Length: 90
Image 1: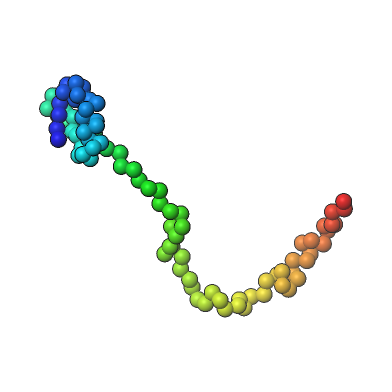
Image 2 (image 1 turned 90 degrees about the horizontal axis):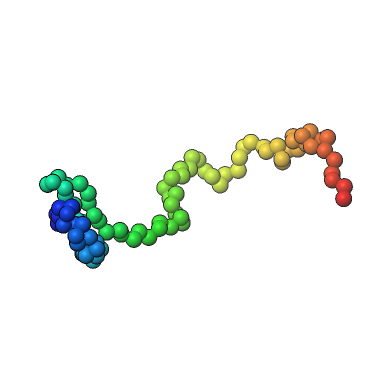
């Protein structure tokens, strides 16, 4: 539906209600040139955060197989990092 700006100004509230009810956009023109489009706001339900990353992870190899590399926490290699620290006294 098209309407000129002067007519829109005179019937503004009625036209807004009509667009909200019919969900049909209204194009407002000035001197025969379309300037703006009045459209109803459509309520959007927010997307759930659950599963939003589905399909973004790829697995390379067997993720359940133990690593061949020994972690320093298991071998005790990081013990020198804590050698100078004393336990807190209360």
